[in-house]
Image (cartoon, rainbow, N blue to C red; front, side):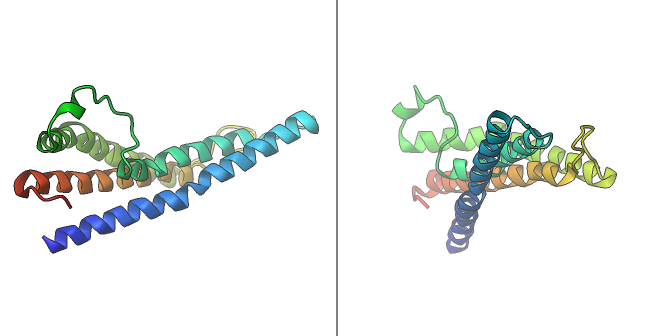
Length: 170
């Protein structure tokens, strides 16, 4: 049991610190947005690259923060009935939802995103725009984000199973 507690704490540590670190992408997003507004509105000289960079950083902020959001129960939920159930029933619903929905979704998402990114790396893919930046590092964010979400989902699933079996909260 102590090993499982240690693994869960480690996963939560990863989720917490990845969230703290990757939340800085929002600051970069904000800085590039202000730069674009300044160059477009004040200097009357828009750039060809900021829109693409903004798209990449927006994707990064969403994808890389999914595990952190799961850790803090920040994803959208409809809990009209769920809130009325006992903690054990809630844990059972959480475990079943992980098996049939979140776990399955993130596993498929991770494997597909990994193939998607690997193909992009193999092709040394670039965008067909005037800016023409490389794309494969940005596409690598997809499997990383899916993995972080899957990892935190597995930790939550383990906590729910332990609570169902032993009645003990981890």
